[in-house]
Length: 325
Ligand code: SF4
Image 1 (spheres, rainbow, N blue to C red):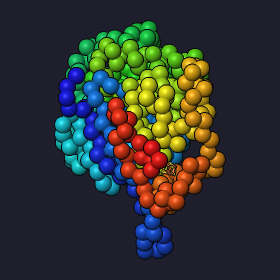
Image 2 (image 1 turned 120 degrees about the horizontal axis):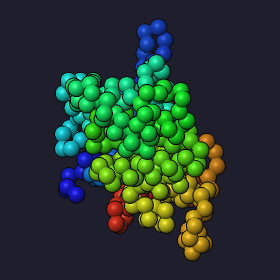
Image 3 (image 1 turned 30 degrees about the vertical axis):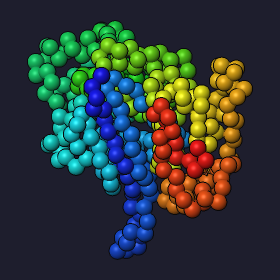
């Protein structure tokens, strides 16, 4: 494994301005991502977990440069891609692919599956020869566990799990290094989820892929991730290796998330903290001062209401943003 991480995200912010009145005066901003830093090593899976609206999907879109960052830096394979022009970004676009929850919502239903998989090869000039492209599309179908003759069929003929396999084949057609997987299994039945997660793992082992895996489901994240970052209201509150995070969570929010999920080991289950939180996630338009989690945190002290805790390295790569950790 190379020393330099494949992806380095440094203190990125994605703020969406709010305008009001006839002269469209800016009256505020939704701070969807508000100072997020992490790195992903080559061949590694970093899980990004948190409740809906915490900014995890926005983070993924920012890394993909489909959303502009308000501040911060994104480095991919050693290159700062944060402000690259469209043309300069093009080779990186091919190397960073996104897998969506519904991969075919925006695609032409009149194209065959083979055409859908071949299309990005034309756009990125990966395989100019049509016959070779068709063969590669069929090979890609085999790689994701589908029959080659399915290339002639249309997307509406497939189940949700099969569609996701086709979506993965389409992404692999670009020969990417990094896959940003945004809730790729959350719309599927549990038994199918496991098959698709296993497919992601097989493909990673086979092609050395790197994943930024975004999900709200802690069981899925645990299964696939090497390290995990927990997001709350636009910030990372804890980042750690899988065992450390699930066996010894240090941030009260992580503890609360995990308290809702049974751990198979009875010793760990008996000793780990069982924190519960109430109330809704506050608005990213007006995040609470101090620690953003303080209105819901059962352990909050006065300092938490005024002073924002920074991510601090505890040990073994476990970092926590909490005054009490
Ligand atoms: Fe709770 Fe305070 Fe820690 Fe925030 S800093 S998680 S409010 S104890």
